[in-house]
Image 1 (cartoon, rainbow, N blue to C red):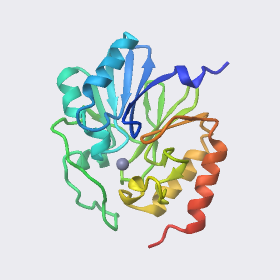
Image 2: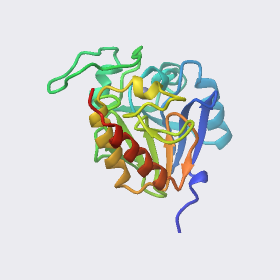
Image 3: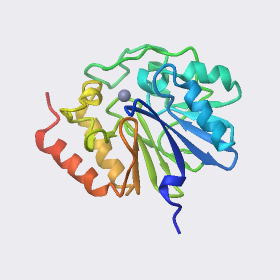
Image 4: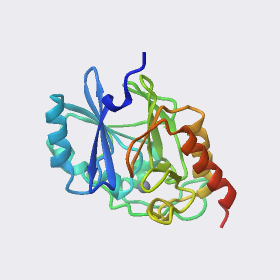
Length: 232
Ligand SMILES: [Zn+2]
């Protein structure tokens, strides 16, 4: 009944560390994130292998390791839609100013991009087969994308799977980068709990391999982060 998750997308990985994903839709491919600078060639080659055009670029958040190749790709794909949350669209300009209701410090690298979104998107909307889920915390406007056909969850940096499944509310001692770049650990943990309620069949993160049948690992990651607490 359900489509095997491994066939629903193509993972493009740089050094096994940073991912972008191509998701098949009826009208072409949706690219989720663009990885670090210099990844456009590899992403375009993967799309060519699939024999489909990239018709839209959906960004989970505006950190440099997710938007790094946006301008290069935009130059090659002038007609593609570019989608990001309205909140992270501000960060995409390189502006780290706190917005109304936000406290703390927005962390991580925001090199910005020349490319402007063609449209901003928010939780509850659809992008082709993908349900957009607001998952603030890592950045204030972070988004996750759930493929409603097979329940693959493109979770951005809410979870990482490199050397184990972790939320970004807790430092993975072997890969602490997502933790150090997280704005609010408390809100990040709430978003991780929210994503769990969608019962994903596979976890496709910004960093690390795609984990199929990851519910138990997700539960463990949430429990561990809750145990250490998110204050301070
Ligand atoms: Zn990030």
